Image (cartoon, rainbow, N blue to C red; front, side, top):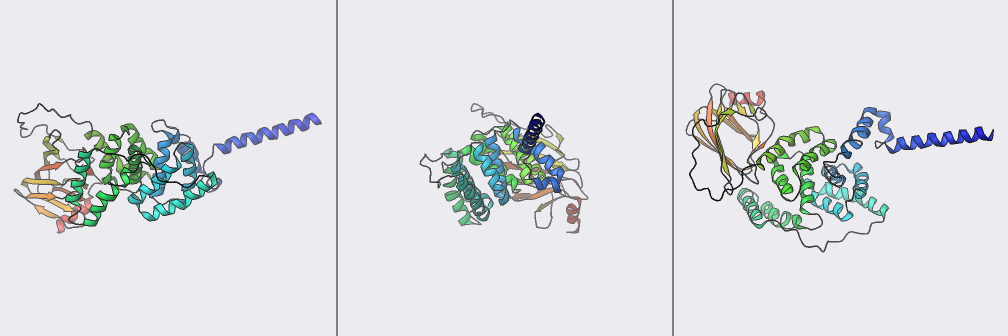
Length: 396
């Protein structure tokens, strides 16, 4: 009897051990399996068992990206668990505090203040002392690049919002970005993840370039998209894909040839090719494409649209100039009526203005487009102009 009892006891212990192991593999709360078992499966078997285990991004970086997405979107109920995970993955308490400080500027003070309460609870449970200011040297950025950035803000923002321009240059970049509590690479990674999470991909080129200039690799930048997709949703991650794609392509550009002094002529029709289908509607052709070598930033091409063809919505960091060569075209700034343009017309689109342009519904149009690149990016593509929105031009 004693042997039987002992066997039963050992079996019970063994069963309990198996259940405990199963519980350890489960990250989804028990209620998830009662209400949405599919969500439990994807949480445990995909998000944590697969994505979090991918080596393309270190666990510490995944925690930084995840916390950024959660804090910037105000998901306070999820903060405590991921703060604990972040510290287990090597993120220091001071770095978590600075992440929240940084994101106050990029997703608003309410989200940051709400996050503080959740983080304080975790710090108290772990016996973490109050965080003080770092005594390390402030982060220094390349002086010429900072001067160019500040000049762009003064030119494009100050005339409309002088206070915002001053605070951007003096406080955001002149103080926050130089704080040593986060190294430059991590601060850029945090910013990238937040911009993707809040659906602001048009702001991504500057920060993705700055991140990679500070040591984030292209593969790590790409992996941030996959990580954030689970915490901010697929649509926002997918919207950032073409933006990051353009950044990565631009960073593969030609290097400066200081000895080059010859004039260059791009002959009419050179390199004629179909425009990328993901950014254009209709059989659009691009020819005579050119890109000046650094330190020049200007580039352009002739773009020919058949009737009804057009670009997708997009912006340019330093604006764009269109010279209408032939036909009749339409151009529209978001929120304003479509305007018609014809041969000899010159259109100036200011920096960061969301717009599209193309042929009218009844005539083809060709224009020569010129734009300058900022940090290697001259355009941020967005969604296509729908047939319904395009048709509104006929009624104008």
